[in-house]
Amino acid sequence: MSDIKRIGIITSGGDCGGLNAVISGAARIAYHLGIESCLIPHGYAGLYNLSNITPVVIDFARADKIHSGVAGSEAGHSRVKISKINNVHKYEIIKEGLKKHNIDGLIIAGGDDTGGVVVDLIEHGIKCIHVPKTMDLDLQSYSVGGDSTINRIAKFTDELRTTGITHSRALVIEVFGRYSGHTAFRGGLGADADCILIPEIHVDYDIVYDHFKQTYVNRLMSSDVKGSTYIIVAAEGVKNSKGEFFADASDNLDSFGHKKLSGVGKYIRQHLEDRMKKDSYWELILKREGIYVDDIYQHPEIREIQLGHLVRAGATSAYDVTFGKQIGGGAVLAMHKGIWGVTIVGVEAEEIIYIPTQEAIKQRNVELKEIAFYEAMGVCFGREPVQYKPTFRQHVGEIHRYM
Ligand code: F6P
Image (cartoon, rainbow, N blue to C red; front, side, top):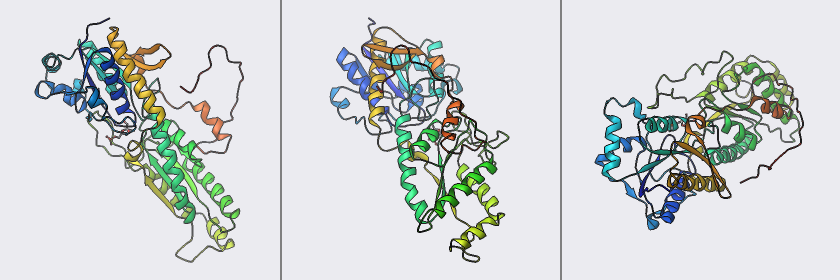
């Protein structure tokens, strides 16, 4: 057993559901082991300034005030990469801060950028342990926040369908997802979206248009009140057929150095509208169905909606609360055992499962072979559907359970 007496908890990167569960799980297990835990506010900015701030002690009474089911983080966040700080003494400054407050080790919750800093800190002799957190779900293991985000995308998308169908509008729902589209994919499926566009598939807008036209018109013709809609869920990082971000993508970088993306929904809408305006079929079909109005209603409307930070906010799913508690509490147990420099990926019965952080933060994309499965169900992914070719095997060993 190690002789740690006091630990610091940091949450970093984009906030999401489950972070408070991580804090609560870590603080409660620490309390159980007789270790004092404290929050270092504002992520790595707080860590760098530790000598000048007072970490917040999370004793049992304070832990009791943390609501695991509320998204965001009690600790506050920043997007600061320690290696980018322009001060040659930065690691020594951090060590002095930790020493000043008698902090023996750190639990750091975050995604690939945050995990990269964990690796960097370890290389500079600062003891830490990583817990996986990103709503983007693009780490090697499950990351807290993913399930809550998927549920929120599915819920908002499903709810938006009522306004879509009432106005017979097609809706383009833009969600976060810069390099990988896990949450657009799962959230879109969860809401029965007609089309899901993700960064992993370079979009052919002619294919999207044809699918939209066919689906929309079929729905219109089978409706006794001539109502229709078409729902697209698109990740912000969707690329065109040349593999480029959409033309208006901003050149601004966030403090982790990523291009700030916003507006792909508008870009997709314009692509569809351009094609629709040139297509005389709409006049024919809308006239035949008794909806056409000269100069005013000559083709259906398309609206884009940015869900933005709504998908990271609000309520946390029970799955994320449970998983957050597992990895937060598991991290403390691992530290107590003297295990550092790893990522906690779960708790199974009496086992705390971990992998090297270096491995955990390697980017994981949506499995394209799985996409073909949903293409066989008629969902459009902005490409020519690929035939799904299943193989079959009998499972050997333990069956993966829900939790
Ligand atoms: O890192 C997660 C993420 O949600 C990305 O998908 C998104 O691009 C980014 O955060 C936006 O974060 P913010 O606007 O809060 O900096």
